[in-house]
Image (cartoon, rainbow, N blue to C red; front, top):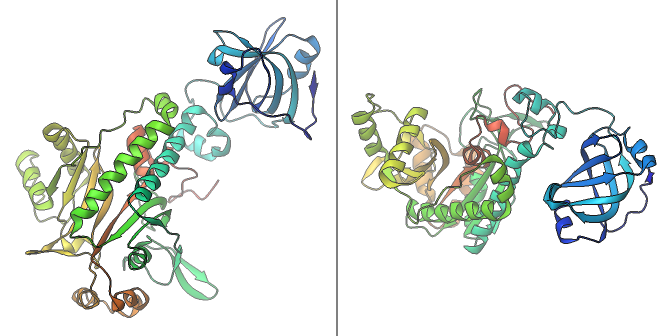
Length: 442
């Protein structure tokens, strides 16, 4: 039997439930992943969020009816679960009744049932709403979702409070020019580069806060590792001794994220052959100045005097950490103050360096963090040293006029994390609807 009624549906079972329901009558709903038509039987493979379910159609009337529905149509199938070792999960639905819930009117850009993805990245991005239905393309986003869940769980366990801050601000967060200007009811405004100012202020309210949200960078990068909009996982904590307290919290967050991916996205990891990292109890660290000495000694280059690490140097240091310490993670601390925002706390005894860090993971900078200034007079002095007026930061500085604890925090780029975990060759493969120099749709 086949119908197009969509008004009343019986209780739904998922594809993954079928092996446990042999002999029972069930209803599954999903997309027509593939149809195979033989002389006396039609095999319908449905796809839902849990996996694939096969229905075997032998009734001539139903065979004729289902033959005209294109793949990716949405179907409801009701029938008896029968054991079959060759079917997905070892079970299939026999003697099915089929209801069409929604018929596809256009073919997908490529066959979604094929194990590999025979499409270029631009084709995938142009057709993301349907292309991401392919299990291999969906998998990175399942890993991303599990990572965020682990981030939240780890920080909740450490007494953090989740906050949600504005993404439209009156001044550029980091006093730079790489911001998106917008018209806010006739008043100039900007898309936020980060929740930095807000999360610092909230450390004066809740002591420990975190946020998951979009940030915007108007930097004209056109590379495989940069986006104009990405998701930032931010945390800020009060009453720190220095940046190492922040690093310790970050270590717990990484362990929690990795554990959540293993527990919640194991199938996605298996599909992509993901090797989850071991997060050491103590992540190795190296001071920026020492890192430059190592690079000068072993790479044939002399980066001493440079205020930052080049991508090739990040890769070399990551390989060094894996070789010398058995760790895929490496903290680089003490970055030069000239490369850090004005709110960064200088390193005691070495004021040209900072109490800040980057975390390298598999050859790429993944996290930036550190200790912040917390005294009002220090902020005024830091801005004056950079030749900046405190006036544009009046709202931000107001919090420090009323007593703020020593504090610090970090920001982790979700898409970069997922890209490194999955080994993707481009960050856009780990991004839903990426926004960059060339893309505003879909």
